[in-house]
Structure formats: structure tokens, C-alpha cells
Image (cartoon, rainbow, N blue to C red; front, side):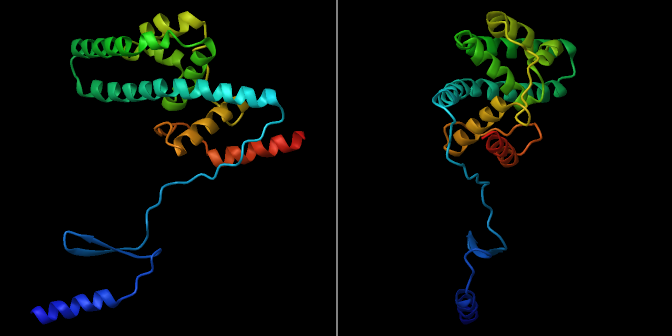
Length: 219
């Protein structure tokens, strides 16, 4: 039996493996063959070019504001998903209300003071990113009273800055929204921000080609 095991091992070791199409995985003594290697999606970013110093300045101001508010949009999406999932498991109406009040209190205690420090434009970018992450406008979230959103928004952001809660995120048609998406994708690649995919249906590479072509046509 020992001789047979050595012979079998030698046969396996003598077989050449293509490093790309086939790899040998050793897991607790077992040999498994995998036909392909899973790779993360990679974007190749072009060099940033600007028509003027003013355009460059606007981009970097937009970048600073986007990086600042994105974590709040990400948090809002996660809290909304968790709330919805949890409420589906709670049958009692009274317990549902009690749970939503707890979520509201947590959000207000953790984030209200920080949100009050945002500028009007930062608040508007946040509303756009809320739409990017949830597929709902902040107005819709307020109207549906999910997780105390009425108190959350009117006590902190909307009342302070008089921003539009109906603002959506449209990188296909609004150039500033595309720039926000470009800023996010570069930050994700650099690991400056933790990636959270948008619920909206668009392709960043296609958007980049579209806006680059439009910019070239203007020149």
C-alpha cells in the first residue's frame, strides 16, 4: 500500500500545471483541481485631465465633499436593509414601533451632531448618495417613515440646509453625478473607502467612455 501511495503521489507531482488555466489546491491533505482562477474586478483609470484650473479646482472640492459624506450614505443603506429585514421577523406592531424607535435613537445619537456640521452642498451630495445606495430618495424614505427618517432628516439635514430631499443620482445624464461616481470608484480601488455597490443599474466603464466622448466633441 505504501508503494502504491508513493507511485500515485509521484504521478500527480510529475503532471505539469498551467499556472493560469488550472491550479492545484491543497486542502487538509486533499488535492482539488480548479479550472479557473477567480479574480477581482479591476478598473483601469485614465489620467485626470481638466480644461481649466477652475474645472480642476471644482473636481477636487467635489472629491473632498464626496469622500466626507459617503460613509454616512453607506451607513444609511446598511441601517435601512437591517431594519427592513428585522421588521419582517417581528410580527407585533407594538414591537415593530419599539424597534424603529431604538434604531432612530441610535442614528441620532451617533450621527446627528456630525451631520449638522455638513455644508449645504455636502448635504445635497449626501442625498444623492443615499439614492445611489438605496434606490430611494430621502423624500421617499421620510414619507414612508422608515426607521424614524422624518425626525432624522428634518432635525439634522434638510431643515438645516434647505436641500432638496427629492434629488436623485443620475451619472448617465448629470455630469457632476458621473464625477461623483468616478471619485468613488477611484477611492474604492485605492481602498480609501470601503466599497459598497450601488443598487442602480449602470456600468461605470460605459459611463466613462460616454462622458469622455462628449468632452472630446466639445473641443
